[in-house]
Structure formats: C-alpha cells, structure tokens
Image: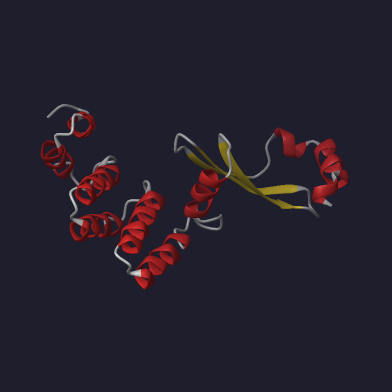
Length: 178
C-alpha cells in the first residue's frame, strides 16, 4: 500500500463520480477504511450517489454509519445531508431529530460546529468567527472559526491584539458592542 493509499483511492473515486461511473465510484468510496481521515467524506459521497440512484434508504444507512464511526470530521455535513434525506422522504420527526443531534455536535465549551457551518452557508463570507470575551478582566476566553475551505480552529487565551489596552477601549466605545 502507498503511504497515501486512502487519499489516492478517494481521489480516484471522485474521478469515477465525475465521469458518471457511479458504481466504480461507490466501490472505491466503500473501500476507504473507517480509520482513514477520508472515511466520513467518502461516506457523504456514497450517500449522495445512492440518493441519485433513488436508493434513499441505503443513503441514510451509510450516513448513520458515518456518524457512528466516532470521527469528528465533517459531521455537520453528514447531519445536514441526513436531515435532507429524511425531509425528502417526508419523515419530518426524524429530520428534526437529526438537526437537534447536529446542534449538539460539541467541540467543548465552544459553539457547536454545525451552527458555525450553517452560519457560513447563510452569510456571504470567507469565514465565520466567534469570540468569547471576559469583559471585566479584559481576556479572550476562546476564538472559534471556520472557513469556506472547511478549516476549523479554536484558540484559547489572549494574543497580541487582546493584550493591547487600546483594543478594550475601542471595543467598549464601539456602539454595537456596548
């Protein structure tokens, strides 16, 4: 096996998918092991193809297995697609349950990633960032961000901007923040 065998298989599968060889794509996506960082994304592609082939029940099974894999990669996309499949099947209670589960997609004390991902879809922006600030002690508790490429970050504590007294003065005097 090559060092990046899963990556190669993933890109080979996407090439099959783009050429409309859906069975070939399904086979390669299915061969990506659960321990791979490409697993969840491969399952999303599988579900998309199965849904295109009018096999929504199989697509739902694939997405549920992806959620149970324990991987935190791209879970908001899985929740969103799963809810959409349930909605298309007029299984509204299940769709709402999936949305509620997605909102509990918990990165710790920060905002659920599903919320930031959805916000990024709704707001025309390159990235979405949330800062939690302790206004009395002039400290940043954390900064959480995601961008349109899917990069995510959580930083804790102050950086140079937050150690600058001028930042806190301007922040306090800025009308929307007061």
